[in-house]
Image 1 (cartoon, rainbow, N blue to C red):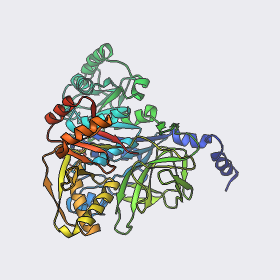
Image 2: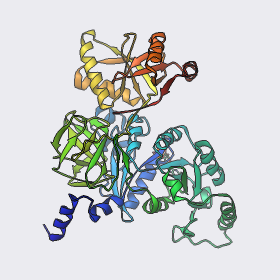
Image 3: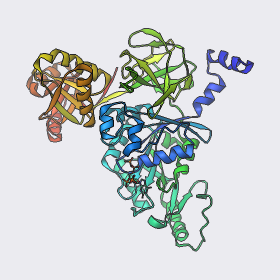
Image 4: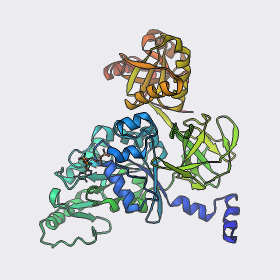
Length: 524
Ligand code: G4P
C-alpha cells in the first residue's frame, strides 16, 4: 500500500469524510427513466450507455427477442416470455461523473418494484413521446417522484416523427402535471427534417457539425420560436429544479441519437448528487463518513446456481468496503459484509468498494427485508420505502386443501419479500393478494409451485382498490363492525379497506370524514 492510500484510509475513519470520499460521492448521479411503454425508454437507455461507454455492456438492454432472453434467463417465466423480472443497475462514467441508471421494469413486468426503485434514485428522466404527450403510466410514475420531490429532467422523444408543437407539449406538461417547465434545448426542424437542437443556455447548436444556412427554413423557424421562448417561458432555476417544482425540457430522438448528450451533459452539470435522507431520528447527509444503506428491493433466485436472496441496498452515506462489519438495525445484529455485489443486467461482480449513491446487492438467506437500514454503528432507521396500494386484487384458490397451512406460511414469506401484498379478509374468507402488475401473479404462482410445492389458482374478487385506514381507534372499530366484508388486515395487521370502484371509495371517504384512507403506507 502506498503512503497516499494509507492517508486516505486513515482519514476515512475520522470525524468527517476525506476529500477523496466526498469527491467520489459528489460525482455520483443515480437516476431512473420513467415513461409510458413504447415512448422509447429502452432505445434511450441504449444510447445513453453507448454515449457513456458503459463499464460493461452485458449483451444488450433491448427488451425484445433472443438477445434479451440470453440476458436474464434465471427464471422460467422470463425464459418463456423473453422479459426481465430483475431490476438491474447500469453503471457508466460520463463527463467525470459516475452514473447509476436504475432500470425500472416497464411493460408486462411492471410491478411494485418499479415504484420502489424510484425511492432509491436522486433524479428521474421523464421520457415523453412527442406525438402522444403525457400518458397514464408516465403520470403515475411522476406522482411517485413528486411524493419525494425528486428533480425531473424531461426528454421529449421521437422528434424525428410527426410530433405535437413544442409549445403545446410544454404547455401540456405544465398543466397536466402541475409542473413548471423551461426548455433547455429547442428542436431544429421537425419530423423528417429534424436535424439537431439549440442549447438555450449555452447558445450553441448540436450536433457540433450541424451547419445550416441562416436562410434554411429550419433556422428561420428556430429564430421565430426563440423570440417567443424568450418572451414567454421562464429561465432555468436550479432551486426550483432541486425542489422538484420545475423541469428542464430537452427535445430529441433517441433513435437518431439527437439530444442524448444534451441530456447527459445536463445531468453532469446540475443533476443532483446523492441527497440527504431522513431517518426516524435525524437526517443523514450523503457525505457523512459512516456508511449507511437502505434496502429497497429483494430478489430471490436470481441465478439457479446461487439459491440465495439478494437484497438491493442503496448506499445513503459514506463508503462501503468489502469485509466491513455492518449493523442491522431491525434485528440489532451485526454481520460481516463478505460478498457485496454490483449488478449489470444479469451479470454480477464483487464490489470491493462503493459510495453513497451506488447500489449493491447483498446475498442473504432472508434476514434482510425491504425497508431495512444497515449502518456501521448507529441504530438508525431510514424512512421512505413505502408500500403502494395494489392495482389488481385476486383471491387465492388452493387446489389441494391439505396444503392450507403450507400456503399460509409461503404467502407470508413471499409477501415479506415484497413479491405480492397479502390481505387477510376479516370475515375469514380466503386470502387476497394485491399487485400493481399482472406478471407478479404469475411470479407468485410459479414460486409457490417451485419453492413450496403448492399449486394455486386465482379467483376474481369484487374489489378493485385497497386503501390503508387510519384514524381514531373507536371510530375505526365502528367502521370495521359496519364494513366487515370489505375489510382486511395486511401483513403487519394494519386495517385495509377494499372497495369495488373509485366511486365506492369516494363515497366511503365522504361518509367517514374522521377516517383517512391512504394509497401509500410507510414500511417500518
Ligand atoms: P420503451 O422501452 O419505452 O417501451 O420503448 P422502445 O425503446 O422499445 O421504443 C418503442 C418503439 O419506438 C420502437 O419501435 C423504437 O424503435 C421506437 N423509437 C424509440 N425512439 C425513437 C425515436 O426517437 N424516433 C422514432 N422514430 N422511433 C423511436 P418498434 O417498431 O416497436 O421496435 P423496433 O422494431 O424498432 O425494435
